[in-house]
Image (cartoon, rainbow, N blue to C red; front, side, top):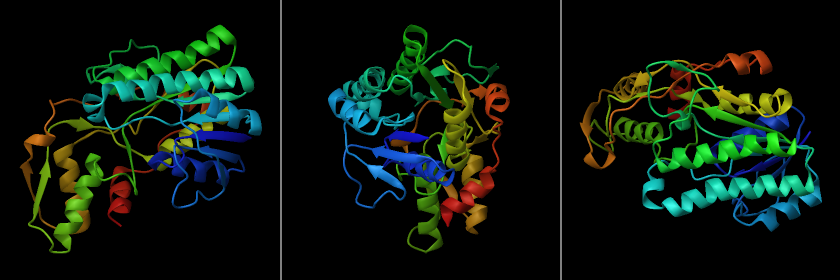
Length: 302
């Protein structure tokens, strides 16, 4: 298939393009600006998801068979600092993409990457794709709206739209303001004797389910290839750790002794990744997570 990938220059975008190209898909990549490092295997065309005409022009020119819509503001605290911008990019940007495809390539298979955050932060029960949504943050609200809009295009216009609701995903190359990359950076500074053996973190009792980005993009590819029209798909590793446990695990992997100190600027209320039922993606796409967190952390440090 010829796959149009938005947000292609980002952390997940580059992994997804590698995954698609390695499985013989052609890729048309787009992002706000042409990346300084070329994206191997992809034809790049810059666009802004807030500009529906720029999207329509690329779709009209390349006539893609499918789309992976990754373009979004994804750093949760950014939603508190710039809520209007986050809502505009994540909601209006998704609407623009859907409209551009409806007019230019309505036959395409479209996957919007949503988030498990749309279910809220309760870990009391296992959540399937039919569970009620309970978004709390501006980020989660924006993702919930984009998710519902995407699925509505299947009901109202008969388009092959789908969403992927992934738990947190991490891996080598993630931006340093995300928590595990921040911890890895601090540990390497300690290992090089460039700083004291102290890890600055926020709430270390929060529990997170981190999937490896390579597992997640494999799930995205399989949904694009095999997913059913009008459905959402949960994605998760199925294993949760506290942030404290992850710091200890990463410190052992790096061979350094560390202690943890609380940075008040990083503290958020104690919360938990939702516990997701992934039976749908197992059945429809034959996907299960394959990379344990220990391997992900080792690769991040390396």
